[in-house]
Length: 78
Image (cartoon, rainbow, N blue to C red; front, side, top):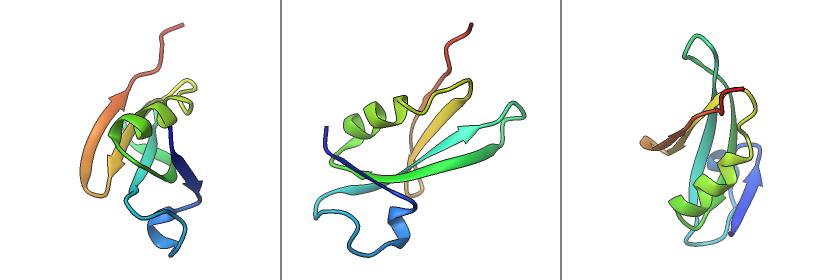
C-alpha cells in the first residue's frame, strides 16, 4: 500500500508523488454529519480504502476523492 498522509494534501503543494490521488476520510458523527477528516494521497481507491479502515473507531468513515464518493466504511457493532 502506497499512501502519503498529510494534514490536508489537497492544499499542500508537493506533498504527494505524481500519479497519486488526493483523498479525505470523513468521520461520521451519531447525527450523520461529518465531525472530522484526515487528508492523504494514495495510488488508488483500494489502497485508500485500506488506509481509511484504520480510522474506524466507534464511528463510520466516508472516503472521498475530491467530489467523488468512494465508499462508506461502517463501524463494527459492539
